[in-house]
Length: 207
Image 1 (cartoon, one colour):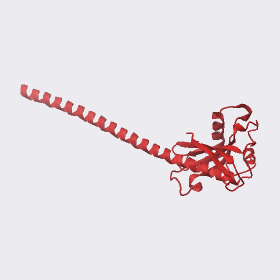
Image 2: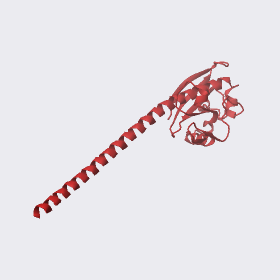
Image 3: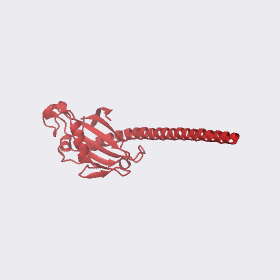
């Protein structure tokens, strides 16, 4: 009788230990799976970011190419000249499903631009196009390209919608399907008649 009771108690203790071990193993497995999932997601995010960087650079090149065909910088800044991929009003669909409003994006960009009084650059949407349509043999990530043009504040003329020194700023952003985005910005100078009359003075990633 005493032996049977002791055996049952021993079996119960072993069962508790086994259950505790199972819970620990399950927790460790879940933690490892979560870590692996986060690592995969992080890798995918980094890869998408790199692809979007290349896409933004393609957008900058496209914006400059379209500027080279324009009758001048001032018509672009004033909105009387349109690119081959005009911005236009209303929301746009990023390949992958999400919606972007170019007006809202422009307002955010303008708000983030340092105020230098009358010479504060005023960003004008210039190009809006999908990466696939703009560069079918370029980066493979689905993206929407938005390119803005603004006067160079260094001309000091106090008229942000007119160019007086032959230099403008161009900002190109690539928006991906998973809320990632990258942007580059450059300074463009008119050095000769179109085509081929523009020079990229400098450019850099800005996001």
